[in-house]
Image 1 (cartoon, rainbow, N blue to C red):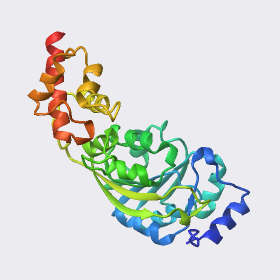
Image 2 (tube, one colour; image 1 turned 45 degrees about the horizontal axis):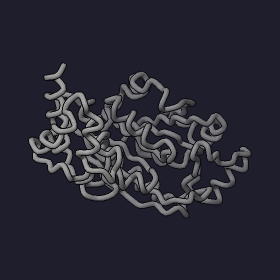
Image 3 (cartoon, helix red, strand yellow; image 1 turned 30 degrees about the vertical axis):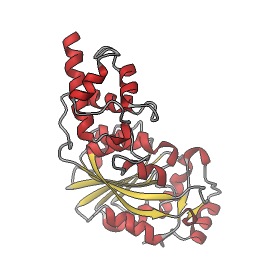
Image 4 (cartoon, rainbow, N blue to C red; image 1 turned 45 degrees about the vertical axis):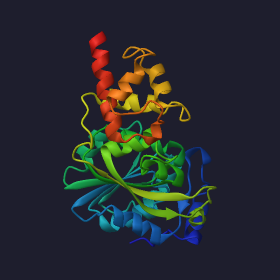
Length: 294
């Protein structure tokens, strides 16, 4: 087994050997703390009968720990400069496959069919680039991939939003979107000092566990999410003001108050105070009204 590279001196040595500097445009910060890497891998609950998809393996620090636990590891790296590094650090193992590709463009169902057909469960485990965290997470959720867990290190602020409950400033449309598909929990807070180069923000590890069914039943998921997004359009405005502008086809300016009251929602409330159940009732009511006018 190749020596672990998750220490600052070894990370700098590998980067220097290949003449690589971190690309800010790709959000590259290399983790150098083995204890945190172990916590990430432990949270994924892997074993030799399970697989792991890593997005953005970098120079392979996390990949090495995944390879120790999982039966199949696929590491998808967008930066072609890092492929020779990965070949050295993790590529000599039969159960590890390093691929060049963009997770937002890759046919993920085909990837799963080709590489994970012989495992009993698959988890995404990754240190995600912060500038593109939300699009990656939403793609993983909306594609309905057969995922057991998504264990990711992301910007602390975004982790707080994904795990937030109603009533706080962190709670918003992202909280509801993630929690509609998954149970979300904070695993660890990660200081900026354990990265090379050091970012200017702190990070956090969260675990998303796919729900067998959403916590609320809605007839039209697209309308549900459209209702949520509209309610949070301008956070300082009341839900009444945001929704009457967003759904003129469902209820006129003078009717939206009645729509909200019929759902048990005071029009003067702001979106961050509404539970997912209240948003579900509201979207169903708006759907009924819209249908009556079609």
